[in-house]
Image 1: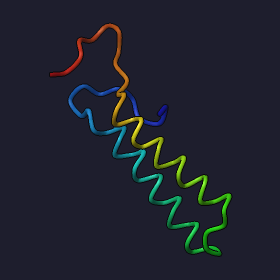
Image 2: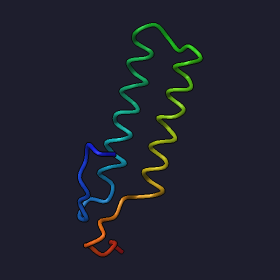
Image 3: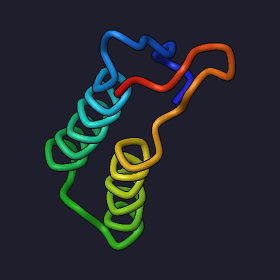
Image 4: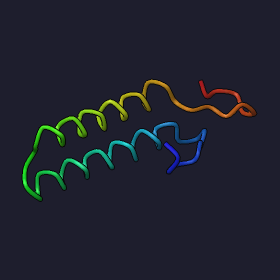
Length: 67
């Protein structure tokens, strides 16, 4: 996720922002006209994106991984 830089002090920041954007996507979908099949696929992919950011965090090559 390019929106949030790699910040070793806050390893949860990328996951948190991805989750916030996925929830906002869900809210906009519900507010506008409900969920269609295409929107359900979009929301599922957004959820998988959040899980993948949490499972495979980015690490800078010059900085050791946080413990």
